Image 1 (spheres, rainbow, N blue to C red):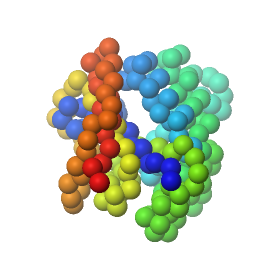
Image 2: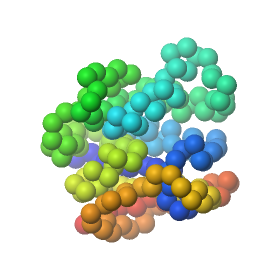
Image 3: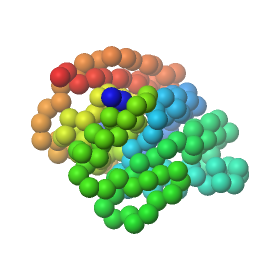
Image 4: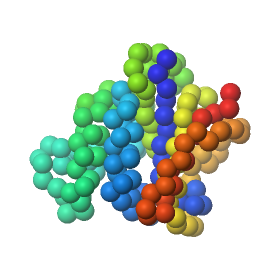
Length: 186
């Protein structure tokens, strides 16, 4: 069974508004490596649309938007090439190397996990909350930025039960951010 890995950038107070953080070259490289280690990405609609709007235009045209640094190109290429599954009840179609996931979430994700391969990679807020409720996430990574946001969406807000984790990896970045990897205690 291939594992489902979750990764998110958060501030010290648990906020995950990406507009309030500035990942650097090392963090982009780390994220690209994580995506490259998966067979496919699993996104909810919001994350899919956010990522597609941000990263797909460069892949289509090869022209970097004004906001994109040259060192962001490998991440853009990696996420563009990745197979994507999109969980949505409102989208009628997707492209960008993606397919829709419909029906019962637990059943659909278990079917994806049972396929042979290196693993699945999930990001975002709403879909991972539902996956944590179903005990389907096999690894959690929190890239904690040295910032207190004081506002914005937070990870796992509304989770109905505790998820006990054990630390399995730690990576410090020159920026002061720390990537912490955990596995559920089962």
